[in-house]
Each structure stands twice: as structure tokens, then as C-alpha cells.
Length: 238
Image (cartoon, rainbow, N blue to C red; front, side, top):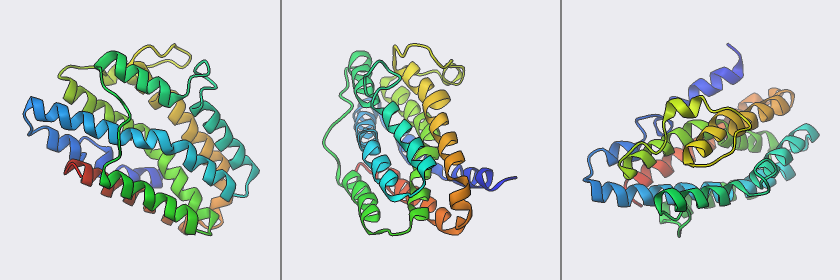
């Protein structure tokens, strides 16, 4: 088993990326009214990461002195900005789909825990001098994106009260299809966009981070630790 697979396997022991996500567990014991309100709130907090991802990708590009990595991050940013979605940025597309299908606004003021989460990441970008550590941070964001989206889709189904997003259809989504609803959005990202970002970054980073894998892994663990703390706080509605 290669080191990337070991890293991914370790990542998937994090409960916030599984059906044991603390928000999902908490929603199961709420009445429908409370679950709906808190589920919507959680999704709005999650969408702060959708809004901030371009900032984090841009910072990583400036800090990792590897042309192949910079090219891959530039491709990633371009896709986030709409290069493959008819010029519509992903954050705007997601916001429209939430509004049209569920009458929910995707973006809302940040909670205290969401603010702490993003400030911790920005602080590390500002203080960290080791590009391998930064590479670990950004790879963690990309590697965790698909499993996190599957959790998000379960939360959506939970507060909607019906199956907005069918996971079987998500996994069968075909690249190149038009994104017409939330199920398409999740499918396109799990199967295409995020899978491609993860693989492209893995290939671009491989020779660079292999020279100092422990530092890269520390950056990877740092980001996952921040995400785990954030999801625990969201489950307490902080």
C-alpha cells in the first residue's frame, strides 16, 4: 500500500467524514422542527468553506515553489470560478440551487466556531514558513472534500425530510452532464471536480513532499484536526 493510500485511510477514520459525523448524530435525536432549523444552520456554516476555498488555494499557490503545483492550483481555482460551469462560480451555482430547491440561503453570518475555524487556518498560513506543511494543509482540504460533501448531502436529506440527494445516483453521475439540481451538484463534485482536484494535486505534489513527508503529514493532520473541532462545535450549535 503506497503512502498516499495510507494517508487517505487514516483520514477516513475521522468521524466527521463518516455517517458518525457529530451533526448527523445530533440531528437524529431532534424533533423535525428543530432538526430543520439546525440542519439549515449547519449547511450555512459549511458553506463558509465553499466561500473561502479560493482564498486558501491562492495562498497555497503563492507559498509552494513548485510550478506543477501552482499550475494545478490555478486549474482548481479556475474551475471554482466557473471555467467548466458556463462561467458561473461554484459558490453561486450552489447558492442558486439551494434557493430554488429548498428555499434556503446557502450563505449566512458565521458562527463563533466557524470564525475560530477560519482564523486558525489563516493564522497558520500567515505564520507557517514550511511549504511542505502548507502542502499538507491544502491536500487535506481537497482529499476530504468528497467524503465531506456526502455528509453534507445526508444533512440536507435530514432537514428536508425527503431524499433530495440519492447517493446511488451521486456515485453514478457522469462527467459532462449539466448541473440542474443539488443532486447533480453533489455528484459532479464527488465524481468529477473534487476527485480530479485531489488526484491532480497528489500527482503534482508527489516528488516535492516525498523529500519531507513527515512535515507534509503534519500539515495534513493540522487541517483535519481543525475540521474535526469545527464539526464538533457545529453539533453543539456554537
